[in-house]
Amino acid sequence: MAAKTDSFQHPDYYLLDELLTDEQKLIRDTVRAWVKKEVSPIVEEACQKAEFPKQWIKGLAEVGAFGPYIPVEYGGAGLDQISYGIIMQELERGDSGLRSTASVQSSLVMFPIYRFGTEEQKNKYLPKLASGDLMGCFGLTEPDHGSNPSGMISNIKDKGDHYILNGAKMWISNAPFADIAIVWAKDENSDIRGMIVERGTPGFTTPETHGKWSLRASATGELVFDNVRVPKENIFPTVKGLKGPLSCLNSARYGIAWGAIGAAMDCYNSALQYSKERMQFGKPIAGFQLTQKKLAEMITEITKAQIFTWRLGVLKNKHKATPGQISMAKRNNVNMALQIAREARQIHGGMGITGEYPIMRHMMNLESVITYEGTHDIHLLITGMDITGIAAFE
Image (tube, helix red, strand yellow):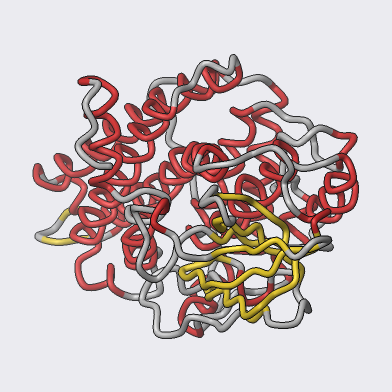
């Protein structure tokens, strides 16, 4: 498949750039330039082959996509939460699988080590994770426990100076090539504990998941633990219960809320350009009322999501963003992006199903994003619980 030129232009109907700092805009432009140069020309081929281009890892590290909000002393860039969101937006504009790789590394691997780890764990792992010399994954979801992680059966048993870990996790982004895994398992008191498991530990395997129609440029696999020896210095010492993994997911969901806007913007941009060039009945299809209706609704929903998410970023910087607010943004923005992808496919007609345009790739990717890290329906119930004070699930 021939490499294509990326002609993306950023939609900013409400002049939201005026709300961003010069540093935030510079970060966005840097990541966008890298995506245009290194990702867009090969992403369609990577998806067709169901391969994650490993050369992206070095580039992601160089543009600061790994743990951008982690303090400088641990190898991060020490950026604010809006900058993190902008990076995720630009990466997902390239591909959701690319954003997933960076999102997992940042929010599900580096964040828990920074938040819950010992100084020794932080110094040992964070700088190498920030540079891409180490890659990580996050093991929470199990074959029979998705939306109900508290039902997990993965477990650890105390053996004196170490624990023995048994169990399995699935749908794990980065698993096939990850050097370390952040794993959550129940101890003998049924408390959920977090730990760092290194590749190469006997009994730890990461079989790859094949046959995906979605996130095909992202590596997905399982984590299997068969009497795996975990040194006690690899356990997060203080955090117990679901609050540990859920705090990680809140950070990741926040990034997804931004990322989904990137996918939506790419679909809108492609549809707008195509509609101006595609001639039917003697004029561009952009001149027909139904096409304009689609495009006008797209830019309206994108603009609403941009305002929504920028405000969430402000709250996140002030440590005021609640899990309920993050759930609302993740649910709204992913659903918005998926609807825009479907409408954009209509504007492209038959060409919309081909790899010449990004529409079908984004649409298939978003079918995963709308489910992972809290399904569309579960996030709705989180909002329901937040406003009524009554839980509709356990």
